[in-house]
Image (tube, rainbow, N blue to C red):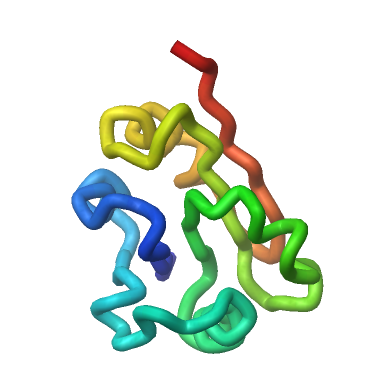
Length: 105
């Protein structure tokens, strides 16, 4: 399953998402795109968009996009805080919106 890793997440997270095919926003040449623009591009090539942008669900009408969106809500966007949430994120599929939340330290 093809997944796109947003700029708000550490690039090293890519290795933790195996066996899925994962690309980062900068690798796709999409760095600096607005959220709406990015989602329109992503839905054409990916099944899942992963982000730490917790404002995204309020800023975009996510059900109108043909891509699953996973929003990591952790203490920070550091790898050590995001990594424990990865197993839940790996289950995302289809067109769904999944908020993956961690407990505070």
